[in-house]
Image 1 (cartoon, rainbow, N blue to C red):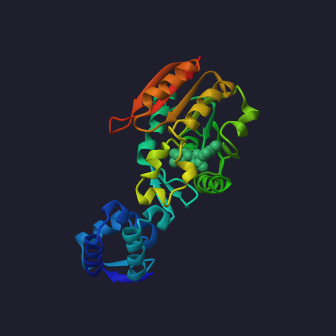
Image 2: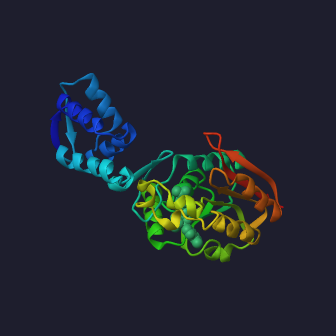
Image 3: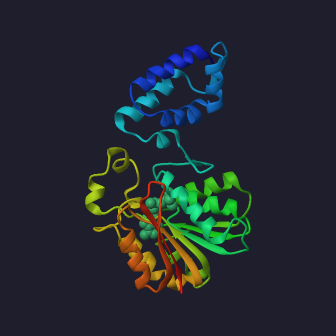
Length: 289
Ligand SMILES: C[S@@+](CC[C@H](N)C(=O)[O-])C[C@H]1O[C@@H](n2cnc3c(N)ncnc32)[C@H](O)[C@@H]1O
């Protein structure tokens, strides 16, 4: 541990932020690499005479910050950590950085099933870091869940994240293409969730550098029109869901109406587009018959 006066640290912090970047990313750096929490920082502001203890020296922290600023490297990958709802998740370049808008999926589940619910079986298709499945498995310890992904490296990260939070075995991890790993639970799922790759090809080409050059293409690209994977997931869902089982999908900001029509065409009821906090039709939900 390195000791530094609060006054010296706050001066250094101001200098780093003057180079660019946002306070939230800087807080991730301080928390994950330097071991300084928000409360440490607040105390240092109130009492500048107090010393702070850092896990890394200022030069090392500065070079990570500059890598973030000047090479557009996402701070979450540099720090190996992403914060999502109340979870602190390990992330590597094999998994998408879980997005704040996706957090709402958990609230949609609460709205459908209530916070206390009897035993049921859910699956998440394309779990990435495991964020959605882990949040559900922790929130509903009596539920059984299966988190799948085509990328085995992503599943290793998701499994690590789950065991970091739970000693329970109510979440399993299977690898394979969309529904294929779920053949043993055909017709038995009460709930299936997916935030699949849904970026149309043209849009993908124009994504900002920090996304396109760093996040896995397989997690983002949804074919020519962005709907390639969504179509496949919806078409096969009736084979895997129980009667009256729910399907919850995240989609691109402008795909809501098209995804809704795909649900209806495949005989789903109670089909609804759900807005995110920015008022964008970000999710589509439906119940199979
Ligand atoms: C948009 S990311 C979502 C990750 C995570 N669920 C989240 O919300 O942060 C899509 C995920 O789907 C996985 N994926 C892509 N193609 C797949 C396929 N054909 N079958 C299963 N998973 C796939 C990717 O590896 C990636 O982890």
